[in-house]
Image (cartoon, rainbow, N blue to C red; front, side):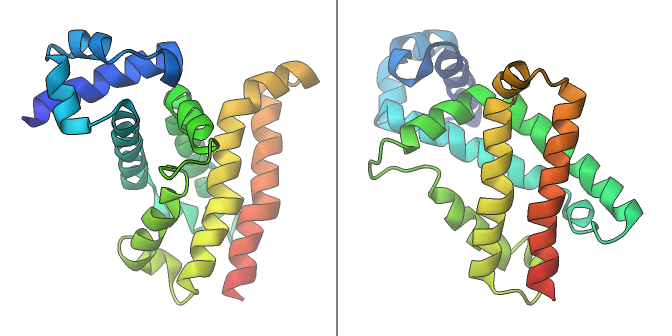
Length: 199
C-alpha cells in the first residue's frame, strides 16, 4: 500500500473513531472517506481494533518525536522550570488535539483483552530509554525511569486532558487556574521524582 493511501485511511479512521467512538465507527465509512475499498483496509489492518492500534502507534511515535527533552530535563533552575512548563504545555496541547482517540484507547484498554494499547507504552518508553532518551535518562535504572514516566507524567497528563473540562465545570475553575493547579501538581510529583531518582 502506498504511504499516501495508508495516511488517507488513518486520517479517515481518526475522524470516524473521533465522531462515533470505537463501537459506532464503521469501516465502510472509513473506506468511503479514504477513497479505498473496504477489502483493502481489512487486508492491511485485519480488524477495526488493529486500525485503532495503528492510529495509536502513529500518535505515540509523533508524540515522542515532538518532545523537547532538553527543556523537560531543565527543571532544576528558575529559568529551566519556565522552559519545562512551556514544554509541558506543548505536550498537553498535542494530547488535547488527539483527545478523542486517547479516550477511545483508554476505554478499550480497560476492557482487559490481550491488545492493551496502554501497556504498549512501557515498551515504547524502554526502547526510548535505550535510544533517543539515553542522554536524558543518564545512569538512572531504565525500569525505574519507565515506571516513573508512565505513572507520574504520562498517565496524569492523559487523565488531565480527558477530564479537565468536566472538573473545571464541576469545581468552577477557570482554564488558567486549572492549568496552574495541574502544573503545580506535576512540579510536586513528576519533577520531584526526577530529583529523587537522580540523587
